[in-house]
Image (cartoon, rainbow, N blue to C red):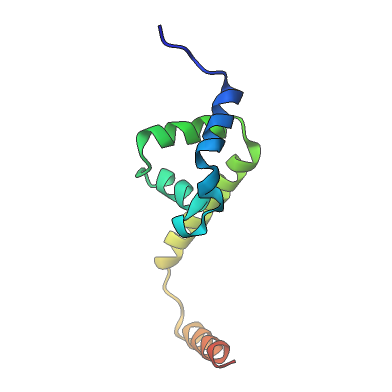
Length: 100
């Protein structure tokens, strides 16, 4: 007979399972795990744990929504053609920034 875990216990277990990743910047930590979940490449068992965690964690839900919005905005930006004068101003600004 399969035993179901209480949602709060599941969230705590998930947090413990990724605790090292959260502080391990070389491994990408939380942002990398979130990005791979959003693009569908996070392993299934990790995705399920992340989804269970999100069911009860408002701050993480807010982070994911913001992250998705940022990714969507960046995709739309790539499709935008800048006017030539704006391109030139941007190039000049970047050149000045690099020289400082």
